[in-house]
Image (cartoon, rainbow, N blue to C red):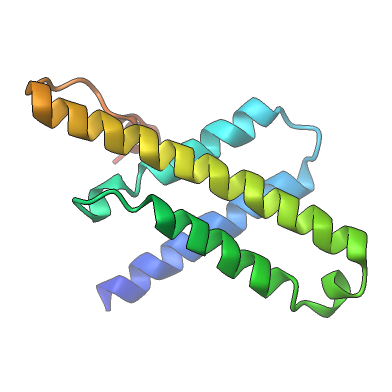
Amino acid sequence: MEEMADLSFKDKVLCDLFDSIASDLQQSAKIVQARCMDIGGSHVHMNEKCCGSLWDQLGECLAEVITKVESVRSKRECAKAWIMLISYVVDGMKCGYMDEWKRKTNNRLTNGFPTSRVDVVESRLGR
């Protein structure tokens, strides 16, 4: 049951991200990129091994789903725009994940304890 709640939360975060991008197309790319990286970095605790390829699979799944929507499928430019947006978002998340994974790996090797991106994100969320 906890997995379902966690998945529901992840669905909401992803939907909120795409909604905020679509509703304010004039916002800074740096803000969007930082948000994507924060989301990706917050997933590093899920596995001890580097799972960068999972982000590629997420992008493929999202692209497959969005191109099945009739209003997107019927307009070639719309489908291209969505695929580019999905690619940008997922690449940002993957970068955040990979940065945090490298930081976590380096911390283990050096026994240092610098603040991680996950700690920063969680402090912003008030956890």
